[in-house]
Image (cartoon, rainbow over all chains, first blue to last red; front, side, top):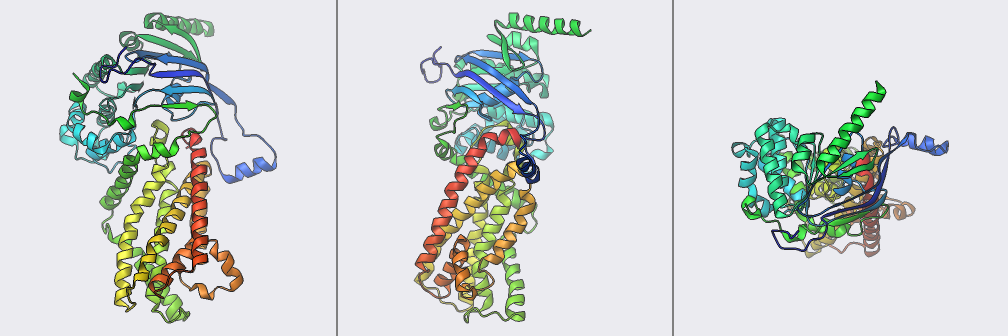
Length: 261
Length: 285
């Protein structure tokens, strides 16, 4: 597909090649110097069972494609998004992202509760790599999308959870992303806002944005995605048309519940 | 609806994408930081906005701290202990050192917890994380500028002439900023891994305060110890500032070069340590 914005030729927007990642759960993540020293003295390894969060995962998302990712809690969906967003690197494998990436994630009051709505938007835009003057130019559109035109000069500590989330999403979808990650967050907005987000996601898709969509909302996966991916214990166990993959996921869950009964 | 109707067109230089490979360091870190220089500015602005929105005395705090320390140290070291500082008025003598010290102390103690304090951002969104501690150093730079103005006023008030030698202040400040940034990067990175840093930092800073010739002149340090003291870049900065402002002469070349070399070396080391540790920040912060 040709990008509608600048006509760049079609190369995959996201390529995940044979990515694996392990986490060590437990006390070893961070700790006091004393723990580490005593481990060194006793020649022990870090405690805790390693968890294979991603196990040889490969994935290609073309521009203008929406790919849904489903699976149980702990199947590796969020880790996959974090690896694609380069928040955390894979242990092995390679991730290529072409074009600006933006995430619909809930940042909460992550910027600072004392900042106003406007200041938070400027900071969020800077983190996404946008110029402040570009963000200032889009401020009106962002406030309108979030439905917060009257609240942009209010410190965000007075915002409700929904208001804050709407503001964050508005910045993310207005950043002209070529790659958009959506992680199970639209549930915090009300129905009208969720519909507006879906509408905007479809617009971005039409412009050639590649979208990776993680959700437990299976009807949304079926309705929105071109393709779906089923993750279990860090592995891709199924991939194909959303209806088929969702059906496989439902069947696998039903079978497991029947067994445990 | 076109992209521009939806909001704004993004500048092309931030939109090129990236490659992440398992087990390999990002080779383009400095370029990423340069591309995100707007972010460095945004974080700096945030610090200033938040700081002065909450504090009733606002900007005055930047000057109150060195001013109060000047009063206390003058009382203790001049009035009580009658320390010999080579004939200069003690308040001017000590303030010259406190200008540099206050910057270092405030910036490092502010920068070290930045990654942990911003864990919500670090875990959820990518950005060059060195922007967080470096923004603190920049924000405290505004305090330094104010303190420097007060310093020049004090020099004039106490009858110390303002000579061209005062221009040596500029390279000395570069050494100060480099050393401060190095400690900020190192401290912030280590603090993610070992939360002990929070407890150790005030102690380490206190040792540094007395190890640096701030309340006493370098001349009082025995010759053997002076070699050790020279390895602390703050020694070169403070003694150099006194050479330039009080003695109206160029700072001692050897001492200043050692300070510059140590500061630069630590800055490179701090940056390498920070960017290596950076790979695990989101997993453990």
